[in-house]
Length: 90
Image (tube, rainbow, N blue to C red; front, top):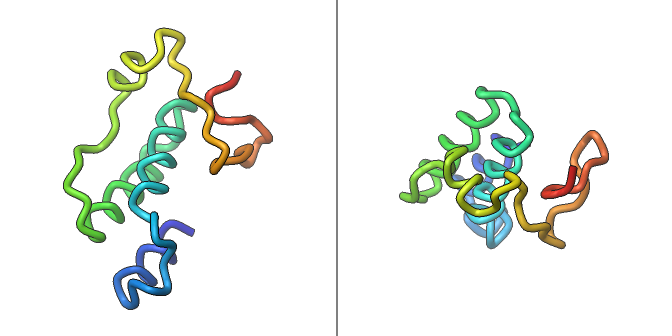
């Protein structure tokens, strides 16, 4: 899904969601917080770079600095993940 959205954004900026880079940043943090797949993180980071995002990839250190329990603040824009968990809640 990330690849399709990034490709759409590269070919036609109007076809991609207006806040695609920010969504990819949130997705990257969520994948990191759930000890997700490294390949997924690489796809997300590559997509951000291709879209022109020059911010550094999220790191586990940033996550623990944000919240001592390692939890992210819940964001209403991001619903439960594929396993039914709500981001930031365990």
